[in-house]
Amino acid sequence: MIDERVRYSDADLQEFKMLIQEKIDKAEKDLVLINESFLNNQNNGTDDTSPTFKAFEEGAETLSKEQNAILAGRQEKFIRDLKNALIRIENKTYGICRVTGKLIPKDRLKAVPHATLSIEAKNMQK
Image (cartoon, rainbow, N blue to C red; front, side, top):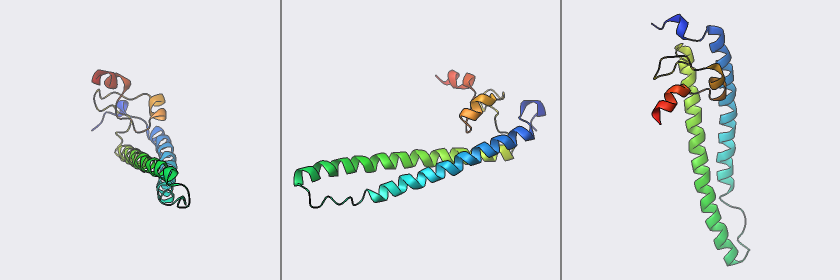
């Protein structure tokens, strides 16, 4: 059982939960936009332009598809990390550094709500 003094209060956890849920909602909307952008890039109507321009555009389109795939992947990981943070809130383990066992400062969690490491632990990894 976790010592009550080394975890955030239920009120704090509720506050973090609302913050994280807002971030999940926004991230999911952003992911939809990224995926729509990817689908819209499939046909941008350049069939009647010069062959040279078309070759450049196809190269740019390939790069754009790769960038969209990378962006989508990052966004999906971000959403997954945020949802994992919600699980930690439910378990009342949210905000506890997984290396030091100390509370991660509120300011850090507000900036990076899915953080599982304190700055101290992060610096030890370097």
